[in-house]
Each structure stands twice: as C-alpha cells, then as structure tokens.
Image 1 (cartoon, rainbow, N blue to C red):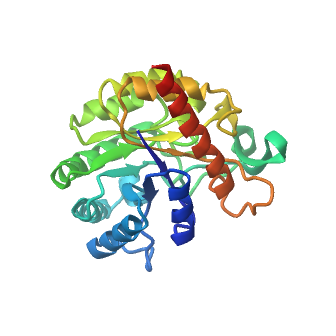
Image 2: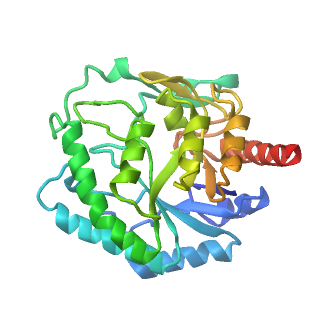
Length: 321
C-alpha cells in the first residue's frame, strides 16, 4: 500500500513536506493555462511528472480529469468530447501515469451544505443536510432519470475502456458524493455497491474498476469492510480514499479520521487482507486552528494528522500479523 497525498497547492514546499512525513505518491491533476482546453497534452503531463519525481515522489494517480456534461447527459457533441477524453487518456498513459480517478456526476461534483461545521476542538469540517437543499430549484438540465444517466455512462465507458487498455491506464470510478438521488432533479447513479458491480460487469476489463472512497460508501449506509472485501477479492480496487464520517445520507458530517463512525483500523486491515497494494490517500480533513479555511477539506495540517494516523495503523497492523 502506498500512502499518497493530494496537495493544494502542489509546489516545492508542500512536496518537500510530503516527503518529510513519509509520503511516497502524489495524486494530482494537470493545471491548465486554458481550463477549457479539451485535451490534456503529453508534454505538460510529462513535465509535471518529472517535476514530482525530481522532488523524490511518484505521480501515481490523475484525479479530477473533467468529463463534460455533454457526455454525462448524452447531449449533442458528446462524441467529440469522448474523443478528446480518449486522447487525454492516451497522453496520460504515454506520460507514465497508470491510474485515472474519475466521477460521473452531472452539473456539479461533490456537494456540501456547510464547510464550517464544528467538529472536535472547534475544527471546521464539511457536512451535508438534504433538508437544506430540498427546496432548491432544478438545474438547467431539468429532471434527469437514472435510465438516462446509465445509458450515457454505458455509452461513455464502452468507448473509453478499450483506449484505457491500449494506454495501460486503469479507470477508477469514484462514487457519487453525496451518494443519494436525485439532487436538484439530477439522478446520481453511483450510489451503492450494486451500482459498482454493474459497472464492473458492464465492461469486463482489467482496466475497469473503482476508487474505494471509505467516506462515500459509509454515507451509503453499507458495511465498508464488507465492501472492500467484495471488490478487493475481484482485484477491482485501483485507488482508495481514506475518510471518516458521522451519519449517513440524507445528513452526515466529515470528521477527523479517528473520530467518526467508521472503525478505521478495521477498514485499513480490510485493505491489507485483500492484498490492496495501490495508492491510498487521506480524503477530506477538518481545518485546524490557525489555518484559513480557503480550501475546505484540503488544508495541510489535517493532512499531516491523517498521514501520521494512517502510517500508525499500518505499522500496528503489520506488527499484529
């Protein structure tokens, strides 16, 4: 198992700090001078990989690669957008990065109704309460059904998976966050272990799998340890997010890793028991005293606490075997 970090910002100081606390892998995206650029080009990918390696780290996962709403909603122009996505996958593979974490949430990605919820010691965490957004108007997409989203996803995956195989890039699908449906009229289909099994069976491929996000599966109300066992035994966990929460949908809050509903020692042991040897990173963390809350969930001090906790769990569980 490789302890990884998603660093915001990604610079020499934060990478040096990551190395000092024993992190080996980086999870990041390609900053674009033109964010609307349809293709992630090879040379910027290669140069960023070399920058990370020169700092003594490995860029193991691309996260936050955009997928257009034309693709997700099955709108005119999606074929062109899928072609661009496929070219990005080819370039990512040629640059030597082997995992892409992606999601299929239309119009907006992860959603929280508060980024200032107080948790242990007054630290600020993110939380979600469906009652607060239930009165919200529909998005411009209107009502979007499960069937429409599944049809769009299948069309996308059957086009992209063969390209990922050729490029030797693993596609690691992230759950919807929050994993409930609908939100503002939009179906959220990646909201259960059964949905992920459907994805795996839809396109049988060694390159089609998932990001096992502990927090997202926990807020589904499922047994996270059993979920790790289910997909780990199929060798379908390509990447993992280590996160703890309190509560389940329709209302939950994120917590310190040692302070939520999940037994994170049991979760870590489950990853070890199924032989997961890929990158795992702490996901959303509380903002601690003395930090600005300008990147909720991604401030550095909480990540230091999380990495120390994760390394301690790994060490302790190894001693127990």
